[in-house]
Structures are given as C-alpha cells and as structure tokens.
Image (tube, rainbow, N blue to C red; front, side, top):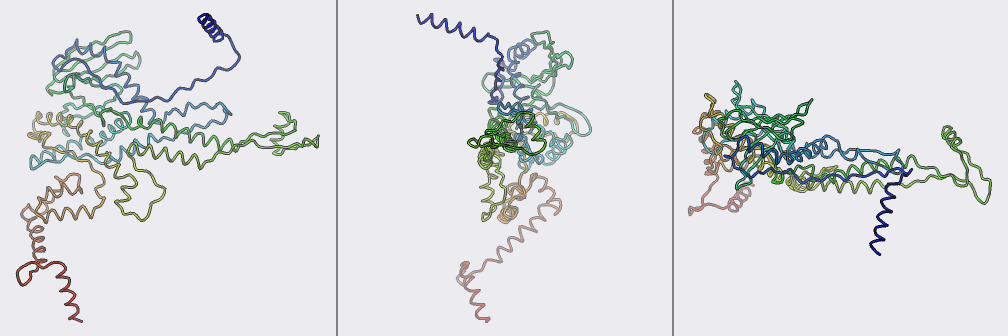
Length: 525
C-alpha cells in the first residue's frame, strides 16, 4: 500500500514538473567558489624512466589536474583584477535599485604583500671570505637581467594564485650568460615522482593556437628536450625527443610560498565577497530611503494623475469622508549605517589579520613608544609573516641559483668560476632605517668589543648588501690595518681613559666616581 502511494506521489511530481506555467522561472543563485590551493602532479615513475612514451602517458593521465589548476588560477587572477561575484548580484525586491560595488580588497592585499616583501631588490651576499668578487659579478648579472621587476611580477602570481613558474636558459650576450623568463602558470606545470624525495620528472610549458586551439609546447627533463603536440580533434598527446642539453637539471622552476600552494586571496575570499555585499547593500539602502514609496491613505489616484503630480512637484489630497481622512505617507525602513560600518570594519580587520597585514588606523594613537605601536598595530606580525614568505621563496630560488651558477661556470670569461650555492646568502631589504640609532649603536658596540667588522655590519641589519659596504669601507680607508688604527685603537684608548683606580689598585665604581665629582663641585663653591 505504501509503495503504491509513493509511486502516485512520484508520478504527480513528474507531471507537475513538466506542466507549462506562466510564472517566471526562479533564478538559481550559484554559491561562491571555494579553493584550497593548487594540486601537485605526481606520477609513478623515476627520472631515469623519462622518454617519449612515458612522458606521453603521464600527460594523457594527469593533464586534467593541471587543467583544474589552470581554471582556479584564471579565476583568482580575474578576481584580483576586479571580476568578482558581486557583479552577478540579483535583487528580487525593487530590482531597479541594484548597486554592485566592487570593493577590490583582493587587489589591496596582493599589492601590499608584493611591495612590502619584494619592494627592494634581492641582494646576494657572500658567506665568509670566499669569492667576494664573484658575488659582485653575480649581482651585476642579476641587475642586467632586470631580476627585480621579474621577482615582483613573480610575487604577484604567488600571492594571487599560490604558484609561479620561471625558466632559466643559457643566453650568450654582452650583459649576462643566462636568460631569466617568467612563465604563465596557466600553461606551465611540473610533474614530480611519487617516490621518496618527490624528484622532479619534467617541466612543461605550452601555448594554444588562436585559430585551431592546437596545443604546442616544450618539455625539459634533466638531460633532454622534447616537443609536444595535441590537435583539436586528437585525444592523446604526441611527444618527440629533439636533443640533449648540458645543464643536467630541469630549467623550469616552480615557486610557491607554502606547502599547500595557497594564495592569499582564496584564504579570505568569502570575507571579501561579504564586504562587497555589505557595501552594495548599504548603498541600496541609502538609495531606497531617498526613493521611498508613497502610500496613499483613503485616496484614489490614477497612474496618470500621479505622474502629473510628480512632474509638478506637488500632490493634492482631498477627504471625501471625515471618518476616513485622506493622507499621504512614505513607506521607509531606514538602514543603520553605523551598524553596517561596525560589521564591515570587523570583517575587514579579520581579513587583514588572517593574511598578516597591519590594520589601518584612521588616526595615530598617542602614549605608545615606537616599538609598542609597531607591535600593537600589527607591523611586527607582518614582518614575521614576511619572513615565512622569504624562507619558501629562498628555498625555491636556490634551484634557480644553482642553474645560473652552473651556466656561469660553463661560460668562458664569465667572472664566476668557483662560486657555489653554499657561498651565497640571499638578502631581502625591508625597514633598514627603522630603529637606525639602536642598530648603529649596536654595530659600534660590536666593533669596540673586537668583533670582526664584516660580522658587525651584517648583524646590524642596516645594509642589504653588507659585503659591498665592507669592501667599499676598506677601500675608502686603505685597508683593514688603517681602519683598525682609526676606530678600534681609538675606542680602546677611550675605554682605558675612562678607567680610574683606587689607592689599592682596584677600579673605582660608578657611584664612587659620582660622589667624588659632587665633592669637587662643593669645594669649588
């Protein structure tokens, strides 16, 4: 019995679903997408197993993972530029008042991170006394390759979409022996082994034809160069071996700033969408209050009469029945802008705290020291979060630096013959003028205590390229011997001159010296 009733209900539902109706179709509201970082592509192969057949098999099996990453990257990049879900806002009540405000905080947080962490060029300094001249040559090559603008461009991809790609190849010219190019992560990916260590199997970058959408690209393994093709009507990739290369490693480098390959936009995207809705709704409420609906009480007004009265700017009412007086009222529901501002500011500050950006105060607070203000307003937190970004960037950049040094060593007369990755340290420049007096005093105290000048200069944090500062200082004073005589001997004499002894040979304390000074002043009076 129950089964028959259920079958009848199903039939009734199917009939009603297919029945024509004059009612408008309900609009389907699509949920805002949620992303959780880019996926890493793994394959069950080793580096030595890479050939035309295995590479083609990997592409046919795992290319869809890259396509999903490319879709998410494209969405996040458009979101960064201002193409955000609020533009698809649908307002069912009074649809003529439908403001769509894009409060592009995604652009703000990305640009802040990019300028705060990568605002100054990355400097390469030596570790110890090894190959200082070669480090200077490396910095000059990086300047010739415009590495700072390319790092800034790469940082935009990292903060926006979570990953970035770069390629380094030999390029013999008068400026540098190598060429650095940033690649589009929507058409570039790396494949890693699923085995222990997750060695990189190959890197691939490709383009799509404008007319026929044919995929054509290049593939690099650790010792070979391949091409790939896939026509619009083909279901499988075609891979062909072209030639070996002498670099011994894969020249396509994948950058990321965290293990999950998360960008900062997707972490707070739901909050940013809520801020857009609050701002749009706030403006809707203001406009609806201005354009309030008129309610005619006990008054019959035709459409033509109403439009004529609006043109004249006045409305005439008349009461026909004293027991039912005529009246005109405005139907309003005032929105509290103070309440929406509190909610907006709370969500905005939450988003800033999540991504590690200092909160923006309307006015400076008083009564705090400079360091306490930096801590309370979030600048200390921002600096610590920036150090994490630097750590992951340096780890990825080491792979790039190894390729650059290898190319330089293989190039005759490059000026770099013995320099290796262990001799170089990457330095990010940030807030070098902050607490300048404290830092300079600390450097002077180290020098007066006998610490090596290059160590004191490096640990002071005043200079991004401590190696260059040390070399120029020694050159200016004519060598380390003259520098020691001028500064260290002078400091020692000053320290010895400040030491005074008692009659028994012991050093006088500070309190004893102060008491003697007071007695001398009294005798003088």
